[in-house]
Length: 207
Image (cartoon, rainbow, N blue to C red; front, top):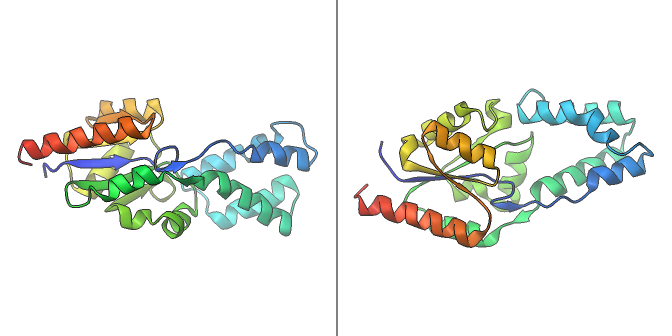
């Protein structure tokens, strides 16, 4: 199917996700050397993104590796999600909502167990686009070309008719290598202009 399509990343694009310093604060709170929390939890973060563990596993590993329990575990997870979810990039979200019916719309996200439920509840991304492809559900993370193949298949579009928007240069380059058009997100104005040009050009060609 040769239909115009736009696929967006979430963190840093549809969500504004600055570094909150939460991990550094937990190093201090637990009286650990700087970087210890990430050292102990690094493979847990990676396993979560690849879908090898679920939320229950994450909590268990947090308790075991950091020696915390009860309210401390809840506080740790709350800080994790506060940074992960950030705040909505409302201008871009509203723009994308206005594209519905003009092109196929999808999301491709390197994610973490629990993201779908929380992002659907807070930001309603499930209603914004037709398909959301999360790495923790597929086991495939960007910039693996199979991630782009998966989202194109889910939307039933050809790679060349699809514009991919991400804030990571490596992912943008990988999407282009796969055959998609791609745009590096730097600000809303440039991104909205690029998406508009892509959709308008497709309509001008009669797709």
